[in-house]
Length: 329
Image (cartoon, rainbow, N blue to C red; front, side, top):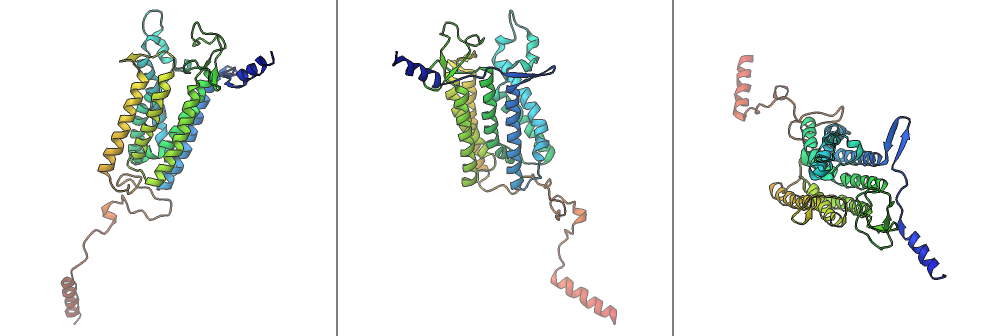
């Protein structure tokens, strides 16, 4: 009995409990903690990206203009990717196809958000004149932090956990949770894949901030490093998750997406290094540069406001002087 008590205490202490609630009702409005986690991540990413872009010489808070396009399109892309990779949830016998549009019920995918966000960011950069790769590099560390914060939403929802484990940091899941595997004991612990990714992403953000300063990674190479780092970690976490997923050639769809992300990241780093061996001249594309109020604006000034004629040659100047002298006489 004396031996069993310490063991029981260890079993209780050496595990990660799941939150008992995942939302709060404020009047008729239901606020999901998952949504708050995502919003917190977006806010942190916007603030960090703004600081990094401003330091490069961009207009303060131009990131807001880009985010106005990037964030909504990213959410749409995240939903579309989730639906395409989980068609059994929405199409077929016993399903409701209209659930595709009920995004508040859950179901978004980060790789879809990356694709949609890239499209939105490209459009936002065209709108503001910011170089797309400059923005991508400035965003990369904050994006990892945002993804880390968003993963806490999975913790609140008790979802997307890994295989059963007896490790001391196993995650507790309510046995009446619809996602709890049938046939397992109620006290089964699971790999906390959300926590693995939180740690991996925060470590990656620190690595990217260091590498960006140490090696001055520009022209999209820092974003390429982001894809490599995030994709490599996601390959591991996805491989031990047990939530439903389409399988192709023995691998989950998100494992394939992670592999593709790593390959794209490698291509970006290699190709951009060869195409742009030097540093970016400005965070803006030519002709769209911004200057603080009161500063002299020369870049992008129309030619009819600038004297672009060549200075007169020496003999022309002498001839003009002689002519003036004769005329004076």
